[in-house]
Amino acid sequence: MKNNIGIRIKGSKGIVLLDDFIKASSDLQELISEIDISVSPTFKPTVDWKLTKLSYSSPATLEAEPVVKEDQPDNRSIIIDTIIDGMESLKKTSRRPNGFSDKALETARNLAKVTQNGLEEIEIYSDEATVIYTFSAIENINTILKPVREVLGTIEGRIERLNSHLDFVFHVYEPILQRRIKCELLNPKDLNLKNAVISYYEQNVMLTGLLFTNINGEVNSAKITDIQRKTIAPLIKDASEVTGIWDFTDGIDPVLFVKRGRDDN
Image (cartoon, rainbow, N blue to C red; front, side):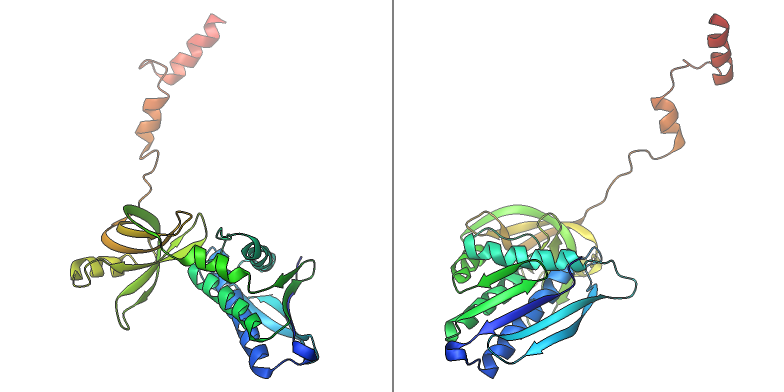
């Protein structure tokens, strides 16, 4: 069981500036929170993080231990593995890591940018693994997030995070890649569609519209023209269907059918 995650920051000439340390620690905390939600089956935070180590020497170190929230699944190892594996992947490839939403990628990019401020090194670690994280990840993250193509298509997922503060924006959680897709209405004045989206909050839906994909063909965002609730039809509606499937007695009373079989033997 992995039971901690931390960050070590090495400053130039052994000096770590307070702003850099706070910024990097804040980015890590935001990344942890986003990954927690992404891998949660309830789409809600599953753990709190207890501070277990804080050191101001170079490397300046912050370490935290996950504590499972009441009535939530134990996702501690999954969260830590997803972060460590994802951060390692972002150093090497422009493929989206599992569990990394756009917000998680943006936070990971912000963390990499901290290394451009004169820091020698940022190290993300857990009990069993360490990632030396550098600004080389920025280009890969930009590639993942940059839209390069517009196509008409359909996406499926669960509606989350409605926001009408400025424009009406919502997110759809896509379970296969464990990420959220930012969505808007193609026609912001379409009140019927807006109300339909609101009515399907926290339900599984199919959305049709203009999809914006990156170089890898992943949908980063969408402008929606239609929405339908996704329903799963039961394979068997009532007992009569079962009778129809397995009616090999040709209408003969089942008791008599069995008796005849025994008499034949």
